[in-house]
Length: 402
Image (cartoon, rainbow, N blue to C red; front, side, top):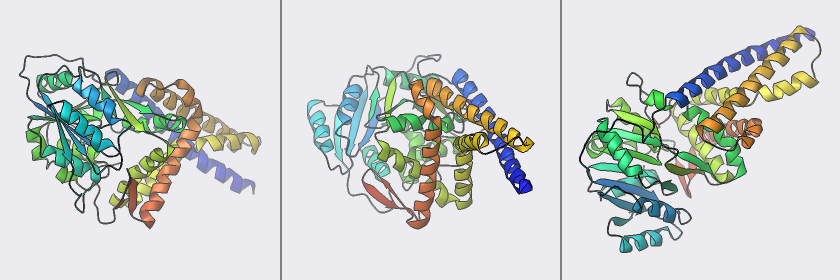
C-alpha cells in the first residue's frame, strides 16, 4: 500500500514540477510583455494625409451599450470618417437607437443586416454587410460595447501610416460587470499576454497573428486581399482568425497597448462568461480533438490542480519523503499561480487586486468551462452565442492554434 501511495505521490510531483516550470516561463513572458509592449500613443510620427476611415460597428441586442459607443465615436477629433452601424437582427431597441443617430448625424449610416446565409456566423455576416456600404480607404472594426477616447482614431491612423503598417489592433481595458467574471478574467488573459502577446504578434519571424475585435484598423486593400470576413465566415472567433490570416499572408501588422484609451466589456454576466469559455474550446475540438482534450487537461493542471494537492498534502499525508516533496512542490506551484494571477490582474487588465485572492476559483471556472465545451462539442456539435445556436460539425475552425 505504501509503495502504491508513493507512486501516486511521485506521479503528481512530476506533474507539479512541470506545472511550476510552465508558470515560471509564463510569468517571465508576462513581465517582458508588460515592459516592452508598444503603446498606441507612443511612436515616431511622420506627416501624412488623413484618409477616410469607415468604422464598421456590428450590433445585436446592444441597447444597453450602443448609445455610449456611438457617442464616443461621434466625439472623435479625426476629421474624416463615417460610422456604419449594423443592426444584426436585434430583438431589442438596438435598431431604433441606430436609426435615431443616423437621422441626427450625417456621418452615421444605418444598416439592417439581411437574413444570415447558411455557413455564416452572425457577427461575421453583419461585418460583411457593413463593409458593403464602406467608402473609406481604411476600415476600423469595433464592438458596440466599447467606449473610445476622443483621440483614438487619430492616433490609430497616425500609428498605422507612420509605421507603414497594413493593420493595427489595440488592446483595450477589458471590463467585467459582475464578481465572477472579475475573478475569472485574469486566468484567461494570462494566455492573451503570453501565447497571443503583442511581442509575438509584432515579431515578423513568428506566425502568431491576432486581432482584438473591440478595435482593429486595416487597409481596405489588405482586407480585400485576405478575403474579407467572407474568408472567415464560419469562424466562431473571427477576430483571431482574421488576424491570423493577415499575418500568415505576409502583411505588416502590429498590436499595441491602448488600455488607457479604449474600454471594452469582456463578459457581461456569469452566463455570458460560461458561453465564452465553451466558445474557446469548441472550435479547437473541431479542429483537432486530441489537442483540445490535451489542452483542457493541461489547463486544469496549470490553473487548478496544485491547490487541492496542497490541501491533500497537509491533511492526509505523513512524514514520508514523497509526502514532504509533494507538500513543497504543491506549495510552490500554488504560489506561482497566485503570482501569475496577481501580475496579470495588476499589470495586464488593471483590475482590483482583491479579486486575485480567489485565483483557485477562477482557475476552476476556466477549466470547467473548457471541459463543458468539450462535452458540448462531442454531443451537440453546437455553440450558442448572442441568442443564436450554431451547428459546427461541418465547420473547419482555424482561429485557435495551441
